[in-house]
Length: 111
Length: 115
Image 1 (cartoon, chains in turn cyan, yellow):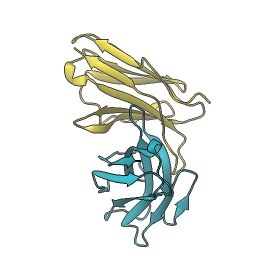
Image 2 (cartoon, chains in turn orange, cyan):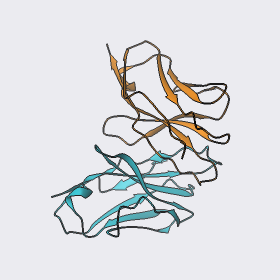
Image 3 (tube, one colour):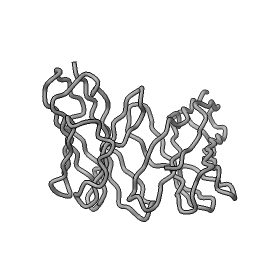
């Protein structure tokens, strides 16, 4: 499976935007880029996904580089409830939905 | 929708005992996944099913682990005999796949402690 690289941790102030980077230089043309997050003591939850174009939903935005070798998850206004581990995952098409988690980025949000 | 339901939420057992974890996926979902999470190894995919059939069990650590999905609404993960190194949080997830784009819905997990 193609791998992703994320910073181990990031900090943000509440109400500020947060840009969480992810590198995936070995991505193949049909791999989807997925983001999940895991709040303390909970199971992971889906955040957003994309293939080539930038995506927006109620939780976040996903900016995908033109060469698709990197992407950025954008939280427009961080809140304390956004403190979590954020996982960037490549979902390989043709392998029946297999989702392999890396170590993720631990986001701390402070007042 | 109640989401993915796992039981028990917490299990404490002694080494050598059999442990059975249960999962009810979201109705209509055709994929079911079992993950294990530890501090040392993070989230590991153990096995997943499609339409009740095991597709990939390469993540199952050893023969002590087994998983079944007798019907579309129920799956079990069994550890026999259990060992202290099996202590972890076990997550079940389900999804309705759309060519790699379907999102996984996770349960709240079953925290297993083997003494």
